[in-house]
Length: 332
Image (cartoon, rainbow, N blue to C red; front, side, top):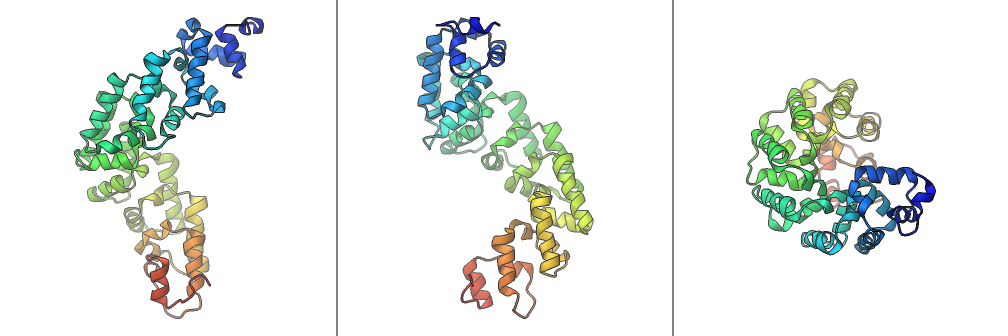
């Protein structure tokens, strides 16, 4: 496509050039959306201005249009504005709709009647309160693109087979992590549950993991979960201790080894002079911030005689900690 052709006045090509698209990007837009060829410059510009009026930063608009060029072909009053108005009824914060469009521009190309309404109804059957439905969709707008029959129902059935109640518990899981619905049961969710079973988690333990830490279920076994397991074993934890660790604090399998697990364990052994067996008795050790909680409390108790368990040291707020150990100035 010649540059001189692209910059012809009044053409849609010229519009894209003015908005900062290069020739290669414009070609990709036309391959992605054939309808662009018949779009008048005025309509494209009108839609562009409308998106900007929603609070979307202009520097983000090229990315949004690249993801879903169809947006510029939609009738403003017939399709675009009504869809945005519908999404606005789901929002509780002023920037939620703009944020959802930026995350997943294709949300504007889907039908409210055919996709959004059935999706909201489906989530209501899972016990998600009406006031929270919008939050769920706007947090993960990609949900609108999933098939209820072939994808979402499959995931719900999988979670139900783990022993979670369809009318209440599964809804809570989705509210905690709506992104779980984007993963494949066979490629991601089933392998993670099988891996968790292999390290010693029973059915009730698995249910607690899914309810409280659904993000653990979403991580890749070979890239994240297994390397963390290998690290814990290398550091000296026995198999049964790892089972207790994961049951007590499941995120131990997805925390960064370099930035989280290793620094805390080295602090425990090298500075606190303790054995790793104590962590198996108090898995939530990994939950506490290294500097804010672990280092500061160790410093406060360094000169005090007597042995304190990790649980006694860390499982209380600042006020109770000060009272328990007779510390008047807890920041001194």
